[in-house]
Image (tube, rainbow, N blue to C red; front, side):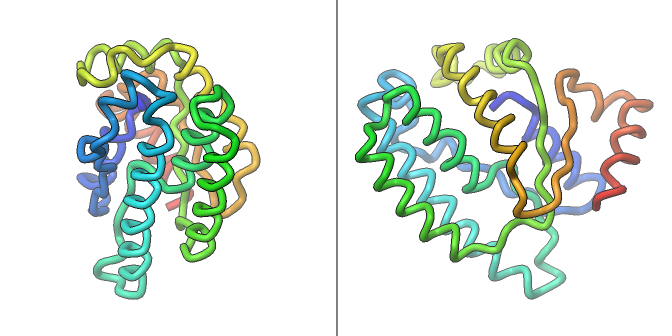
Length: 197
């Protein structure tokens, strides 16, 4: 969160015609409660995200056979929900070991039913910049997110990307968001991206 996913998806839509698929975070009925009391609401919130993403991934997988409908870009995948967010909550004790095991068994079955992405784009960003962006966008439910929680997510993302092999990966440093707005930086970004598109 706060690394620039929405801006990047919007850019890919405008520049290359990819249909944007955004995470429906606002629809999660647990989210406000989760940020207020993570241990109480972590499992329910993560199961909601997992089931919602699974349905979305199945629908998108079915579109891949039709070239006219197969050009889309997601701002977040089911893999992150399980391997970053739920893992972080389990590490901190917000999800019990028993609940986490149940969650992983559910995720494992879902993952086997899905086709991996054609390309994974990873936006690398510091926790300090992420914190600044979260404060600037002023979503009420996000303002009290503890910094250690964000640090845990960032650490898990780095570890996960180091071992991710399901598809090609494009890594970009999004610390400074002007790579999409500054003409020179945007040209550099496009050149790098077009090598993998």
